[in-house]
Length: 155
Image (cartoon, rainbow, N blue to C red):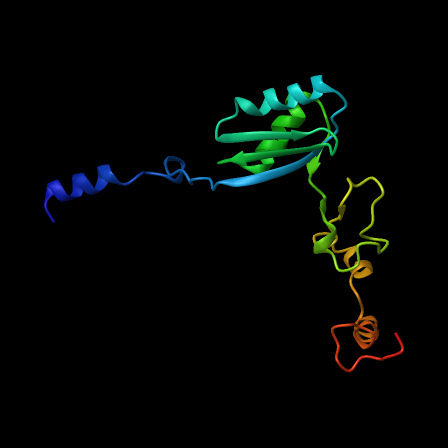
């Protein structure tokens, strides 16, 4: 190997991990932030609009929901909203009714949830057993189901 090869190899590779940047993926970050008025809404939007990597910010005041899309880190977005606005920020804890098998189970139903949503029990291991059907429950429901051709005809 000649001196030119050694020098070119040395110049082309970064010396440490600090010089190598990992590219962020395009993603959507949903957060729950208490929004009382239009001023709160503007404050949240202003905190996120000038953040690097943010493509769009959508604020839904009725649901206290903020949706951010772009090449961002979810933890950084949440920290920034909390720091700039002084409000408590948490990841969006709700999912649509359709996703949960038993939306009215004690672990899933939340009366503070927006209309059409229940608590995301699939991500919370402590509440998940309450919202999932046991094997006996599943068997009994299948016995009286309209989709089951061998179901009981009493119904």
